[in-house]
Length: 216
Image 1 (spheres, rainbow, N blue to C red):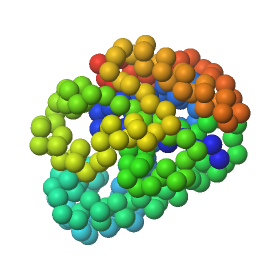
Image 2: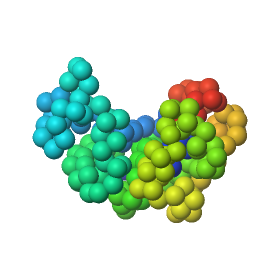
Image 3: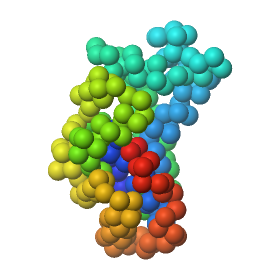
């Protein structure tokens, strides 16, 4: 199992970097996408959050409004811990099952809380995406976040500086899209060299987005 963890702060550019790795030939997964699947109507997680927080967290079509959930769990108290205990075990199982399938390619998984939830005990190598606080705030404002939302989310996570220090590889996402692609290629090729996985393939631009949309 060649499982590489990809982490970073909110707005650092994890989604864009994951797309670059996918374009280079890696198998990829995103823990946030796994959460989306867990929230689908009829699932155990859907029933549990509805029982705890009521219909106020639902959209008109009956699906879970993740923004409403975030408003609750980042308000403080123990709600975030409760939700984490609910969703992390099935997410972990789904990702490890995928990673256990024999493959010659690297498997890179975006894990925003990689260190906070001790995923680093199960990964072979870890990559951290970093940007400065001003760039982070600018990207999140473009999403419509206010300063209080930024502070409340950031306060529940390890800082980007800490993640960068702990990671095996760092990617600095404050420049051009081309510079970001170059960093991703260097990291990818080094990981392939270390683990004997397939070398860089595919088009380096695959999965990437315009520079002004790098902040996920």
